[in-house]
Length: 97
Image (tube, rainbow, N blue to C red):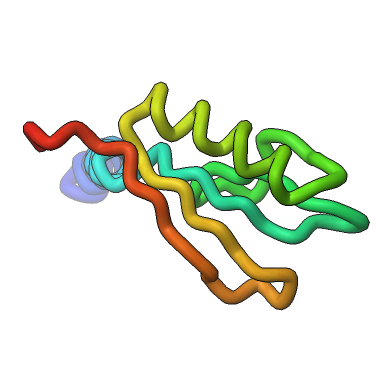
C-alpha cells in the first residue's frame, strides 16, 4: 500500500516543481528589444525569444521599431553590429524604478 501512495505523490511533486519553475521563469522575462542582423537585413527580437518580432531591410528602420516597443514596455534597446557584437544600448526605463 505504501507504493500506491508514492505513485500518487510523484505526479503531485512533479506538478509542484513544474508550476514553481514556470513562475520563476516569468519573473526573469524582460521586454528588452534587440536589433540584430537577419538574413539580408535586420530584425527586432525580444530578449529571450527565438522568433523575431519584425524584419527590416535597413538597421535604422529596425531600430525605430525597437525604440517604439522599448518605450511602450519601459525596456532597453540593444543594438548589434553585423557580426553580432553589441554596439550600443539605449534605456527607456522610468527613473522611479
